[in-house]
Length: 283
Image 1 (spheres, one colour):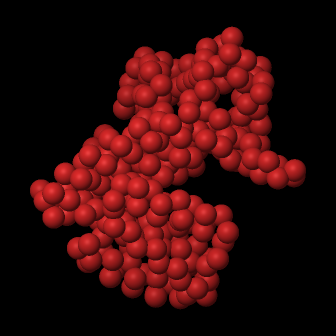
Image 2: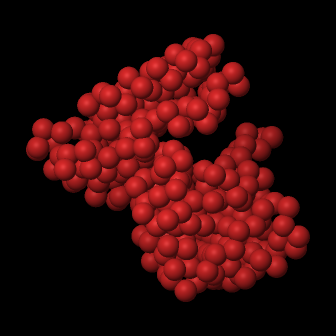
């Protein structure tokens, strides 16, 4: 068996085209969806992520504002900027690139963003809406993973989904979204005893631990759909996921590559959430 490669780049372009239609419909009404991205400091990885987000907005004809603040920016100054954007009618989505410098409380930052403009889906109000099944904004990475499964024709309902990783950004919201899609869900961590016992039982396996190649082919159920959320840089400079792609692709039914799998979808769903926010504001 050779797994079908889930091409995140191609699916991202397909999904972006769908959302561009909705963005264009808003523009006919005089509304251009707007996203403001704030970055504090000069973290190289964050700068790349932000540049890709701004590029995605340009592709769909969205308005975007890229706000760069010095690393020593006071927490009060950042919070004041968020408040200003909360009241800016041109801005429908606000994202603060994490991590922020240590002197800034990230929870205060996330709580300061209006729930109606929280396109990352991290505000406690939006997290609560996800828990109760009344989702307003889905966190972008699990939202993207769900879209990859859908576009690849993977059946979710009635299947056993196993998630390795329990972060607030990926693992927990992924579990909730799979539950809402009527999967039976098991959440594991890197500390789970006999992890392979659980992963081998997964029809859908989502891995988000930040540990390079920790899931090997012998830990995967034949024919399973494997979504690798991890991205790690090896000593030789190459990128890899949390799944050992070479051994896994001979067992899995579907698998995402790293890079080129989940990553492009994360940014795509951020743009989708921004368009949704503008649609809600236009009603």
